[in-house]
Length: 141
Image (cartoon, one colour):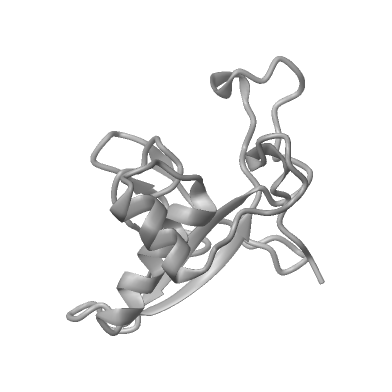
């Protein structure tokens, strides 16, 4: 099975942070501490499920271009290091699904319609252009 690489989120320890609902609520809500994508999107997924939305947690690789401070060759990180949500069941949206990410810290600041292929390009309110492409190995980029 594929695993998420948490090393960049660990502060010198070798144990992964707890993603239990009670621990997430205590840290993020009660103590009002910030969190990483696993924690923030994990807690948001609980909320979305509680209000009846279909929610999947997806691991993904992040693009590391020069605009993100990468001095080497631009491209996707080798391993999945990020978590985002695929949300369906939104009232009035039919069978549409959306990519939602409250744990990245930069645009897009709203959901992206999950649409792959020709005509799938979207422009966010911030002016970010985005499109999803199906790769030969079943992955979406």
